[in-house]
Length: 131
Image 1: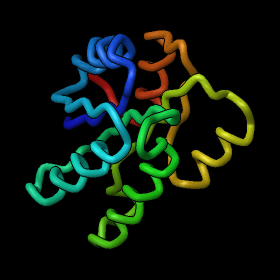
Image 2: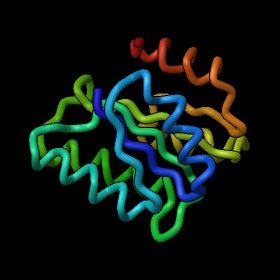
Image 3: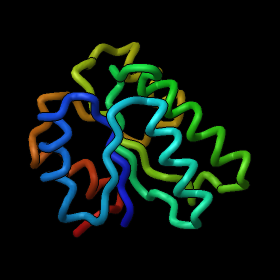
């Protein structure tokens, strides 16, 4: 499985790398623009990401905007919703409006920080992703 981790905090990025390593190969980006570029490049290469972990509070383009752009790219390329990348929003924002906006934009799951490994693994399992 190919995984895109979009996290601007280096410590959090390393933590997410450790959590996700058992699930497959990953690429880490440090801002929203880089995430969209990496996602587009993966589609162009014919090696799309199956899972994205997006932080909401990101420089240049926040996670909500990244999600919106990614879903638009998938639609433009004819990727059916059932074949679209699974997107887990990872953020310190746990307020109702942030959660609802993420799901409105097409998130498949939402995990608040600090991320507890068991909670992340359970979330992925619920999405049909296992080791």
